Image 1 (cartoon, chains in turn cyan, green, red):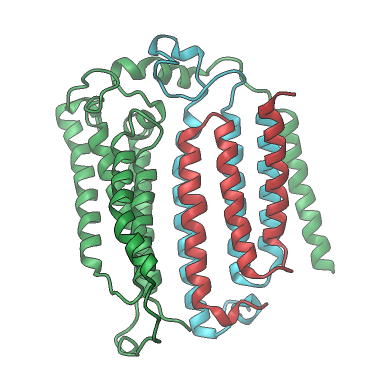
Image 2 (tube, rainbow over the protein chains, first blue to last red):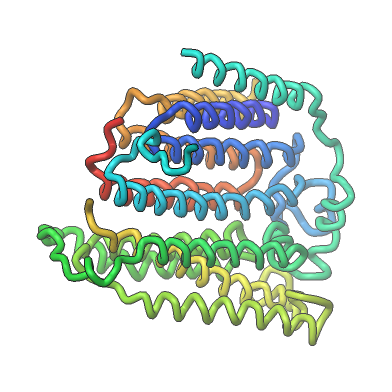
Amino acid sequence: MALIAMITGFLLILIGLYGALSNRNILRMIVAFSVANTGVNMVLVAVGYMKGRTAPILDEAVPAAEAASRIIDPVPQALVLTAIVIGVGVTALMLAYAYKLYEKKGSLDISEHTELKW
Amino acid sequence: MIKRLTLLLLLAGIGSLFAGLVLTYVPDETLNLTASYYAERTAEDLGAANIVTAIIVTYRGLDTLGEVTVLFLTAAIVGLVLARGKETAGKPQRQLPPPGELLTTGTRLLLPLILLFGAYVFSHGHLTPGGGFQGGAILASAMLLLLLSNPARRFSHRLITLVESTAGISFVFIGILGILLAGGFLDNRILPTGTFGELFSAGAIPLIYTLVGLKVGAEFSSMLVSLSETEEL
Amino acid sequence: MTLSIALGLLLALAIVVLALMAVRGKRSLGISILSAGLVGLLASVMFLLLAAPDVAMTEAAIGSGLTTFLFFFVLGRVRRGEHD
């Protein structure tokens, strides 16, 4: 199960990279970046999975005394929670800049914005 | 054509690196040192039932402070970049049709329920899966419903910024209280830990997570309101 | 092959197909954005199969819902630039 999720995550990263480098429209590049973001999070969560164990929440099914032998690694989940929220923040910033670029130039094609080229 | 080929070559190189990582991956049999420390000591030291919440709020609380700061920066920059100058503020917007009866009545019915559900999610973060970030996203979706059902209404940024700033300052203040009264920054033992599994247990974790949930909800709402105030080009 | 592994394989196949649909340039921009949102939703189900309920909730609410809303807000404002 962890192997399936890891391979899917790496495939998503590759597909997202391909989309970000081969599209001309700025909005399509941002969509590809968001797909790659999801892939990275999937790889991180897949690393913490252990076979035959359950989620790191203590209740009647997993009492506190035998927690160390019944739950999976909780640290990657805490890291991925932060990563998802920051990912959506960065996407919102990219969209705001895309809107401003369209306002100045009137086109979303990346080859029209050549002010930074030398 | 050459560009496409170079791109595929680059992707093949990165893909071979990833394949090397996957083939040499051996999953653990037992928990490593850090995870076993967290698993054994959470119930007696902190009294929280959700170990991921305990890690985010108390054990690694400094990371949460950094994340909250990054979100604040994002909301502020989106508001700054999309602000309209004074000269375009007077331009008339195009006439939008009024929203239908179904949407307005449904909004009035659903809005208190969505707010209640969001408040439930972030106040029970130490007992069940959930917490501040998920509850904040649910609060922002309530704001989105308001925005969609009444597109001609102008929202004041004042209330949202007031909620966000107050929640942020209280979060840092509680962290400093942790230095003065208990073990360190954002230590949750400034309030009694209580019985395991109750709502008012785990010290200051419900309080901290409530503040984080309000702050995150206010920030996402501010981003949505800034985006919806732009005009159509 | 147990049920969860079969479900995991099905989800993985669906995720990869939807991701390919989202980045190819032949479809309209609305379909691309919806496919990216669906990738997030199916990833949230996969997180549940990986025993991570907190992450699944966060990905479904923020990664799938809010991101798609933000995209459609901006798409509605740049109507004339969506043809590349």
